[in-house]
Image (cartoon, rainbow, N blue to C red):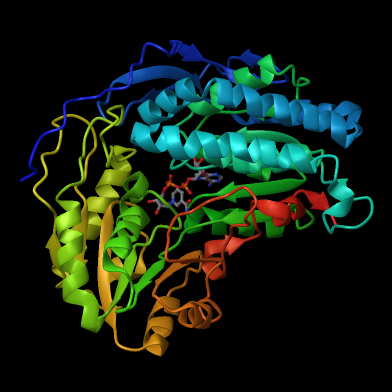
Length: 480
Ligand code: NDP
């Protein structure tokens, strides 16, 4: 039992003015879908309907692509980089000015704790626009030749786990390089993308440079498959990533494609690691954003000699996590994003038990309404268990053990994914030895889930290809 209870500290919603309904953002204006279709977006913490949103069909996507093409040819691709930079800087400043509003909106629509949207997501969104604004007039020094050219119209499809941050990862480098975009946010989290469309209007961004088409998987398919899209950028499941890769390869092999897909990262703790610090890193690795993180440290690998101590400290720490209202500033673990995702987490967790692993959660009261899952640890997990192999994308940690560094590397790499990994040890030489052998795009040393716009991010194997962020992220949007 905690020694004392925290008084509720809810962030006010009064700063928001959510409209009853939203249109598609095409050619600088909000418009209804051609066939008038709409869908509802809800708060996953309460199941309350937040707004009605237009559902784009293929005719709407076509209209958006045509607007993007016009803007690309008549203006954006020929505008000097320093002029494009001014728009991006203006957008970045507007995001900072509206940071509180955007954080509340993100937490409402997504279910993530306000502490995370306020302190991580939205500051990183602004940082991405600032960072790429700085590149817009320096592209000839980025290592892509003396006169790098944009690709054209980018079709971008993003998931629901970091709705506005994924938008920033996609839109900021694309615009900095002189491309125009048609972006589809996830069906369950469209609201911050629509707030971003309003920011584009306020920044006087020329019509057609950014178009936002809301909808579900079919809309995403229409964006990725549109014949006049020159570049497709997708973040989401490996399954849909494969479908997109296949359709691009068959129908339009000249289209450029970057994919950022799933992961099953190993977070590796050696016996000489500072345990309290490592426990914070383990918690941040898998319970940050309810584990809805492609690079989440979902496989904890602890050196056998330290396992009992690490697990005891981890259990003590989990008992202090507060789960509940995402808008409460004390909340550590928010709501699962959708009923479908909750079902997937439940199914895989039940399977873990059926396969013989031991399940543990701290005592934790779940709210009556909304979609919730307690922080969960599985011990006695073997490499063959599905919970050790498949992306659960929820607050569920599988614990495995190892004896030697070589065994840790072998187990860590025994996955079709390769997005990230973490290493916890006192020895710098061991960190370097491990990092050079781990097949993962990012290896964190004595930390986890750290992001910076200057640092490239991306995967090996089934985690996708292409890099986002940093100088490398420019390469995905330049004809080099
Ligand atoms: P999806 O891959 O289905 O969704 C990602 C985006 O692609 C969404 O905008 C989605 O639209 C859209 N989409 C869906 N089908 C197509 C298609 N055929 N062509 C083009 N775009 C499409 O992921 P889910 O949201 O269904 O999540 C399923 C699982 O994927 C999760 O349980 C998790 O394991 C993994 N995942 C991994 C992510 C990562 O970053 N690695 C992010 C999200 C999910 P819509 O949302 O409207 O369906």
